[in-house]
Image 1: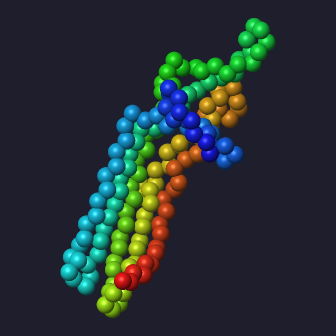
Image 2: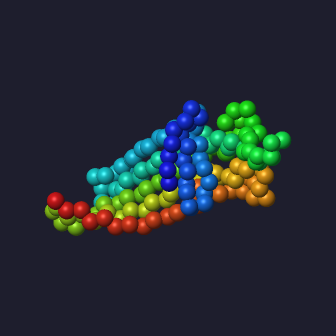
Length: 157
């Protein structure tokens, strides 16, 4: 993966992964993170944390290949501005449930349950931008699907 900056924004070339090129130019993004401890003084107390992230979809600079009068094949954009076409906006919600169990003085075990992309948003992050190809506008990369993770953490001091 390589990155370069231009007047159009940061351009990410994903190389051999065959996931296309992304123009990282978003007009807005937001993140809200929080943690709530439910009855921490009681034996059954636990923590609930979460993160909500949202951002505008990446630009989709559509282009086509043409052969000009001089016989040279050229790659030509089909819109005036880079962001005339955009991919869908992305909204992600991640949650964590955590229960800490004190085993003895200075030793605790935490049981963690994480849910990533809880809304199961599978928004497209890049598409084939060359309209001359038979794969034009095919999705090249999407948000990963919902994932659950169970974990244990041993803490001592």
